[in-house]
Length: 153
Image 1: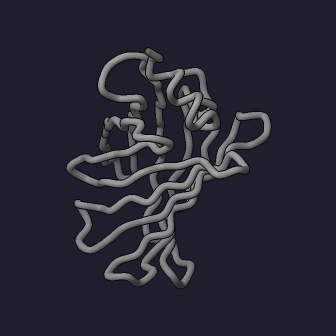
Image 2: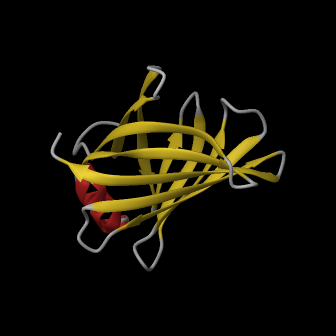
């Protein structure tokens, strides 16, 4: 029987390229292009070889006014998708032919909202861009622009 990492490698090899520590900024923009929110984010992506989760993500967020939040959540591989079912969101991630990762997540903590995320890794795997297209009640609401660079920890 294959371990968790081997299963992810077989189903979504580009996903493993995101393993490690990332630093960056998340900026929320409304549909008029105005900045709604901005926060610094440190992220750790890991792929445990055993246990219930094929992927675990840790996020530490910090705003300029001193507010801080931290999150940890795991996803399990189901076929060729990573699947999440947490108190904040539920949905899945899949890999395109061009090694871009796409996610669709229903937000349980934001009424009638979901977002579609695209994650694109640079060719040298040192930086990545993530874009979240938010919808609420079926209407575009905002975009989250995530600019991240790899760090050692």
